[in-house]
Image 1 (cartoon, rainbow, N blue to C red):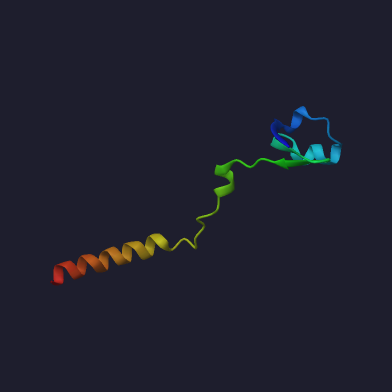
Image 2 (tube, helix red, strand yellow):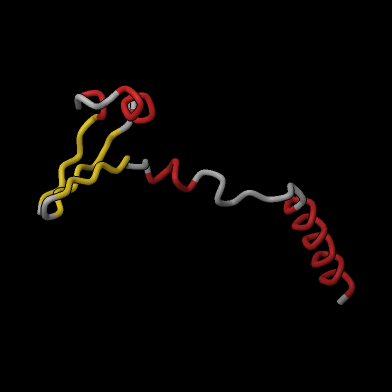
Length: 75
């Protein structure tokens, strides 16, 4: 069993697969009598959107900071 990572453009693939994989790196895995081709995802692109929010976190944070500051001055 072996694994190799190549540019998809370097492979001679049918057009329907080549268009989907164009410009990407692919991982070729040999497993017994079969060969598996997986696109390799950039770890940074894979994490993109992970921290999506509704946009109100900053407002909530600033409100909490103001409340904490008020509590400090009250004591």
